[in-house]
Structure formats: structure tokens, C-alpha cells
Length: 284
Image (cartoon, rainbow, N blue to C red):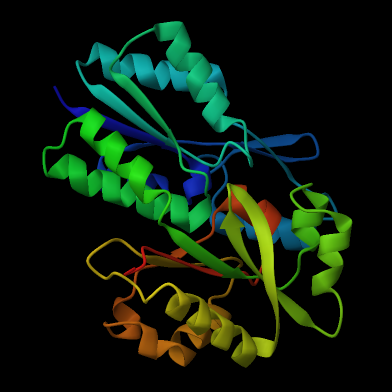
């Protein structure tokens, strides 16, 4: 009996990376007006950001359906596998609820579902840790228990160019979005209690970098024995490379060896171009 790890595209795990890790990534739906796409399947990162920049249409996202989860669960169960389903925060999407509906329909005790209470690159490193445990022959119950513990420890900090996309997507209030519109201030965000929270304001990349380093220092540093990752949104990685260079003291490896991923369409809808994020497990 094997362990099938299933997650959603809000984790920013590409289909290519999913194949390398031998996991399943179920795509959320991206809509530009009447046009509908499957994240990472019928629309890739370049296509998405080009559309986001060039069109006046504000894209919308839709959760993975219960039917899609049920299909994935049944395929795994029929193959004799156990399932560990790792989901975006239930406070940010209905994916977790869809997974629960699907599991209830199947009624099999080999399906385990984790509400990560986080998103994006933080969700990604929880999935990566689950993959590591699976490859060490942990069973589904043991993996689920470990991820449930780790989801309370994982940290993520993000620097956005603007909060406009989050406001338009209904993920923060209009009042909160004003914070990023004055004097070119860059909002600094994290995820707290499963929801996006503005934790500061940075004027310029240098100030943003200082806040990044302070955030990591506050948590005792990065545990490099565990997964960690940097992500960026948009068509160019110039800004993320600058942040990496400016915060080089945080890392134990050369900049070119850091795990860097691009924010995909599901989260790009709300982040917009120019966002940067770091997710890690702290030492303390």
C-alpha cells in the first residue's frame, strides 16, 4: 500500500514539479471574463501574467470541485493507496470543503485531509515535507499527524507592489488596501490564523529587505534541515534577485542554489506582478 499525496494549485506546485515528486496537483479554475482555464494545465505562468497586465478584465478563481477530488481519491483508493490531501487554507478557498465532501461521499478511512491554514509557497513546503516523509516510508496517518503539527510552525512573509489585486479579489478590505497606495509604500503581508494579514509597510526595497530579515530573526532563523522556498510573481525576476542579493546573510547557500519558484495563476490573481515571498520553518 502506497501513499498518494494530493494538493491544489494554490500551492504553486507546477505539473512538472508534481511529476518529479510523484504527487497530484488539482488545478483551480481561472476565469478572464467568459474564458475559463485550468491553472497550470491550459494556462501557464507567462500566459497568465501577460493577460493580467494587458487586459482590463479582472480574473477570478474557482475552487477545485468535489467531483475532481472524488475522482482523484477514487483513483488512489482503487490502486490500493492511502491518500494525504493537503489543502489551501479553508478561510481563503473552498478547496478543503470540496475535499471533505468528496471524502464523505467515498466513506473510506484511507483518506486523510489537512487544512494547512496557509497558502502559496508556505503550502508548497508543507507538501514538500509530506513528500520527504512518504519517501521515508511513513504511512498516511503518520504523515498527516506530522503536517498537522508543522502547519502551526510554518512562516511566510510577502512583499507586494500593491494590494489592489487582493482588494479586487475580495481577500482584504478596501480600507486595508489604502495602506499600499500612499507614498509608494510596499505592503508586507503574512498569513495569520489562515487569513492574509498586513503586518507592515516598507518604503522601497531596502526597507522591505530589512523587514524580511527582522521577520526571520524574530523567529530564530531558518531551519535549513527542513524545506524552505522563495517565490516571485510576474514576468521578470529582477526584483526577487535583488531581494536575494540584499538578504544573502540569511541563507547558507549561494544565491544561485536557493529554491526559487514562481507564483502561479491562482495566487497571481491576488498578488499581482512584483510580489515576493519567503516561506520557512523556524529554528525556534
